[in-house]
Length: 487
Image 1 (cartoon, rainbow, N blue to C red):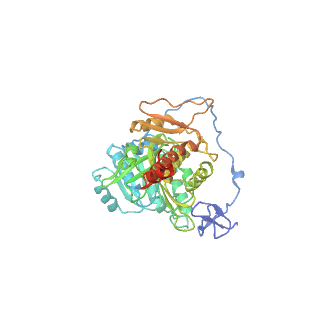
Image 2: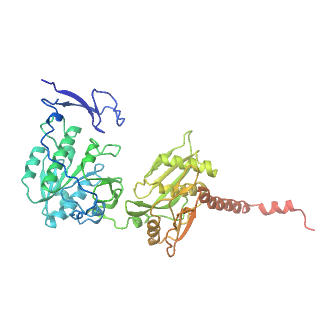
């Protein structure tokens, strides 16, 4: 008889190892390997039993299928991220930091779907039913016909869902709290999360109801448990933002029924999460256009153009190692951009403490933000404000060239809608390049090298220095002495 063996699974990334070791080679984390029992298959192997199957039907590429039906959540920003609503028989994973608003937005969406006449079940593994009721009363949702339950045993949950014939939406809050007694591992481990999620997804596909799973995140911001969980679901949504900030960003990092990297913007209030239909205006509401170190970036998040303010501050370094503090952008890309400004434009930035911030709590990942960040850095270094009516977008290469970015016309239209009058963007290609459509009241300035961006700031700084020198006391008298007596 074959013996059961053990293996060691990383609780952070799901990597499997035959023996214990202190550091996971997959993700680099320490002390994350947990022992799990693996039952050795008995009897004939899978190859010997592979008989009696049905023939798989193959079809051609031609043909059309109707778009999937949607369950609208009545939250426009959430529907935008999902691609138009929740698809029946689909599985959605929602992750985010504790207290960021995952349970709040799902309770709001569940209450609206239930009010629309669809059978909606909310199963909480972290809170009691009375705690969910308290939140619903605070949000003004206590009259919604929502079915609540508090359970963590997977067998009980599956048995209850199998008896539901009209369920349209099932929310599990959270998947890390569920456990299956057939496994020896504790709740929240890789084996438990993977097995419970797989069973719930199988049930959702067979019964036809939409399944929403809430997942915890680690201190690095990634979903706790195996990464295979993200491959099992149809859509993965992340809540971004600081709990001390009123804005919340819901981002789709995976969506089989819609666009990826689509975002929805919400504002946390006493009545729950409120949709922000015009994020650009809200992100720029507190902007002051006459301060050095500020530039407006015209970005694209999914299919939505968004304008945000990039803020940079340079200060003399007090110690031997200058600080680089970045919020909302890639710190490695900041170091590269500073090196380009020093090597290609002769600027001296390395001995200063550099602080960079994307205002509003939004995290920018696209390279098109390079030009706006460069404008903010140059403005801070020369102490000259940028044009308050100017937006920037473009990728900066290592040789200083400004490279093309996608959807330039959508960025310019968003800037025009918010009242901006000028834009600095990459020069169109000599062959096959197409200039963006002309927009009334918006003056585009095309540049091909980072030096073209730095030159106006340097010229203004020199003129300012010349005027300051001429205004010094005794300057006119010194010029008269050098000229000598007249006649």
